[in-house]
Image 1 (cartoon, helix red, strand yellow):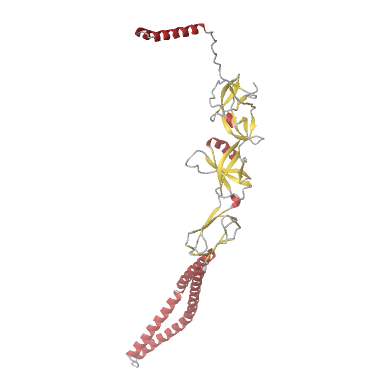
Image 2 (tube, rainbow, N blue to C red):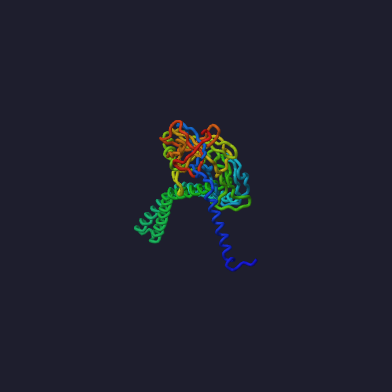
Length: 415
């Protein structure tokens, strides 16, 4: 059957109208469901019951091994390295030979200096002997001068009596003048004796000093340990040519090891007060599985250019004898006792100054002051906090919540 054009247009409209009417009838006759109630979410957390008490907090620091006694031994002479009997990392005793240098050049210099001293000593002896001879010769010269003077007087008397000649008088005068000049020269030599001796003695002292300096250089060709310690660095090997000032070896005192660790600024007043009062501040650390006992002895006199705080210097009291210089170490410093503090897991601390207390099923924020760390009897590291708002028996939240805020609804396993 063929539909008319009008029927082909009206049929789809009729079908659509019937569908809409059916949907409306079904919606009107459907049963009504009660509206859903959205309840407040409850977060499950862990809590701990706390009781403020007196505890000794500890402070975790990061330091490195150092020592105030480090000797950087350098060459005092120019010479070739003959032998290096020691090795890096080895322990040595005071006086042990560390480096031997070729001493032949210094031997030649010592011989020259000894010759200079002997030469000047011989000159002094000759000068003293010459002085003795000059004193004896002066007596003869003075006697000859008297004879020459009498000869002049006699020649003058003969000339006045016309028994002599003028030439004889002139010869007598010439002899007298020559002898007088000889006497003056001899006297000047005797008067100048002390000055010449002082000059020679000064030269002798200078030569002896140069000889001692050469002998000292000779002794320096054998480089020895100034104290018992451990070799940190060996800078030369046999066959090297070293000049004055070249580094040879670095040695540090293994019995004077210290650990330098920076103490944060907020703990400095407590630490400084304890040190000023003479209180001992023990600490502990660990190197290669070996327990190390330390004690804070003093604070550094200069603060680092970057970062807050001041470095503390810890003396090793037990263990750590084999610690290498510059080795890093975690130091747990025991601080003086703190009153009315509680120990909590680190998860309980939000930021640096806030914890939450369980009150009527909700979280209530409490501002706290961090006093340090503490290790319980099970070896767990905890944080010590103080707040006058924390009371005996309070239950503090120990679960880290990403959306923690004051008034948040919570529950515990005990609820």
